[in-house]
Image 1 (cartoon, rainbow, N blue to C red):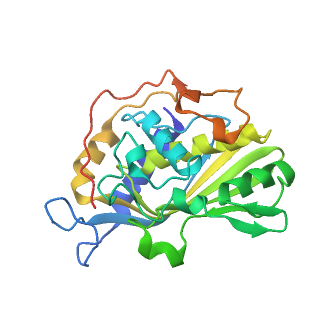
Image 2: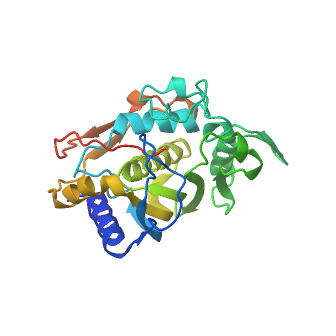
Image 3: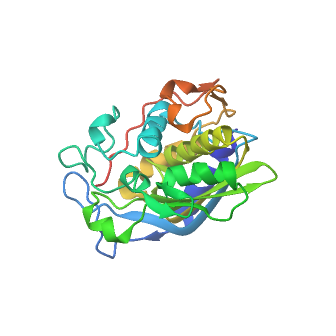
Length: 275
């Protein structure tokens, strides 16, 4: 049983047994048929993944490993807001004329002036990891209030804080909102891969990913599938491989990442997405 399966199941069981139902209040999200998309939720879930020990992908169903890395590269390497660049089409429901506005990758590409020169957020991280790795200021933030009105969707996973201890690169992913069925393991895998990337190009070992979720929820129409996932058997975690020859963050390609022995429940689960 992978540790990611254990954490995922524990989170979902807690939400279903202890969570607050928002059916008594007005909610913003709707289903495609216009019905309000209500949730049961828990506040303040914190999960810890030791990336040196195991790659945190669940096996109770398949996580689209390559697609989640494609989006990661689109945001962090390309700093793009052009949804037409994504083959998965995951942003199509929100994009207007192909753009998600000043969201996600756009914010990482905004440059600021520092004593050492001009950097965008990603380049600042890369600079500090090489020149001042024990800094306590290794932070990115995509939740920029002055630009929210020009974002097609406010960032869910919005902030990464890095910290180096004893040569290990650790990270805290802060997330304001998490659709547990659709996006939980997707985001966990993305930021696990990102820590591996940043560690490798900075000459560090990968450490711990801490995932902090403010509003961890399960949508009403997802509950039957979640209950089935909770009854599924689990497999051991696969082995994560990253191309060791890549030393420049911007030279990573999708083909540089793979999983060995990724076994999972062979069923095509479908989740309607609230918008």
